[in-house]
Image (cartoon, rainbow, N blue to C red):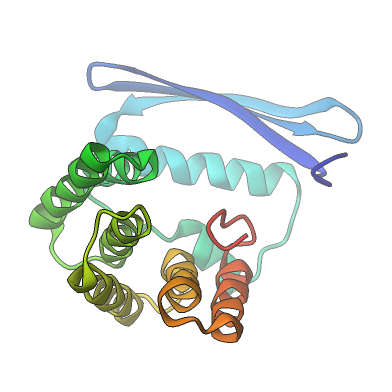
Length: 201
């Protein structure tokens, strides 16, 4: 009731070596009743296919009809390489830790990910967030502000629909440029693309 949601997805991911087991269940929040529960097994190399299977099962379970554009967004993958994706997750985790050491480790992880897959919108957006956090925490310099803006522009050039990059533009306009009206515009764009974007909310 507090969140105003009709459905809740619960689940676990277990990893042993290279083996993965995902369990997921879909719950009707209003009736407090299970709609379905499934398990998926595979290897790390299968993780994206498993993710697609879980997403499709959720769509089927709530019997929603997706538009072609919504279907495209559900199946969209920001990073296709598993090793690069793990480095991306480590990088983002370090950035949101916020301490000087973890921020710099996070940025290094993103750079390592980029060394594997090259230009990537999600990675550029992550790097922009890392530099923003450095500056916001008093650890960065003027050149970091410029690099933050440059990475955000690169991210949006590669993927104009990336909500993380639009949220970043919001923060750049709010914190660095003092343009609150433009910041709100970018935050709203990010929320249109991803209503659950924490950074935009």
